[in-house]
Image (tube, rainbow, N blue to C red):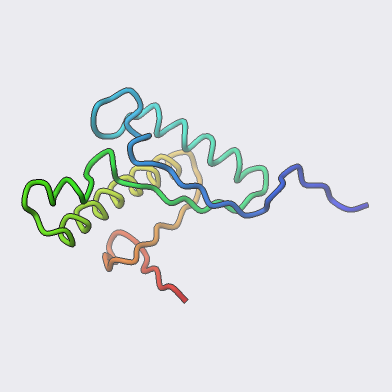
Length: 120
């Protein structure tokens, strides 16, 4: 008898808005929202799905904000990417605190924080 899997997909890519991490706050990361996301990701992964998460940094910084105050566009985008890494580390910490193994990848070199992502 074939094994049945209730999931429609065995691999998913979840895109989370950085702004959604604020919850009801006006800035930063809401601990309850972070915990909720971790619980939901673990539930899907526990059901048998391979889960990849892409998270934004809009709750901390947006590259376009930099342009408005005279910061170079590329530097502003880099600031936004660092905000994304902050959110990624927060989610990684929340998942690992619940005993879940994670891998954090970045296309920007920061070996002490994340593994290098190479697009190939």
